[in-house]
Image 1 (tube, rainbow, N blue to C red):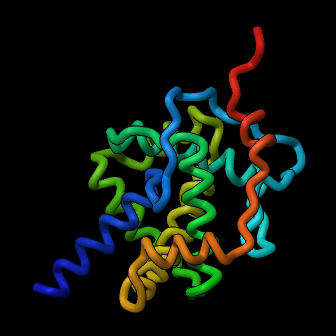
Image 2 (cartoon, rainbow, N blue to C red):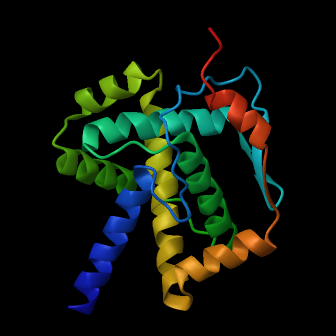
Amino acid sequence: MKQRVYGLIVALSLTLLLIGGGLFLLNQPTQPLPPTPTPGDDPLATVNGETIGVNEWAAQYLLDQSLSRLSGRPAPTPRQTLDRLINEKLLLQSYPQPVPDEAQVAQQIAALQASWHVDWATLTQSLKTVGLPAAVFTDTVRRLLMVQAAQAQLSAEHDPAAWFAEMREKGRVTVDEARLSSLVAPSPR
């Protein structure tokens, strides 16, 4: 019974992370315009010296939007996507994981497709609609399998909410708020 509950918690955690969940997500009153990637991957945030670039964040935001439509769940805000990426970096810096093999990634993708009731063609078309190749989704699933394993380790040792709060407080996390605002602000007319 304990293993079944643990399995459900782990599966729910991955799903929440994949659609833009995560801890400490901030709500914004309006849904801003989609971000536009910049030619160079300018830094948007830094987590203990590791950069989250504008292009990385923009691709993940667009992926979140696409997957939210497929899953029927509310789409995360641009800030929620950035907070998720920051939390993932904090988690994987403290709990490094081996890279999952292709079979594990394919199995997780099949499980997600089944839960969303979509085939590969529908999924890739949804990604193309927001300008993303399927590789962005596959790479994200690979990373989120690593995050899922790290989160399981974290949960066995600490209260996750307290741990993330402590890591954000004592870690070196910086966000270029001006750049983030300029990327999500509606264009002047």
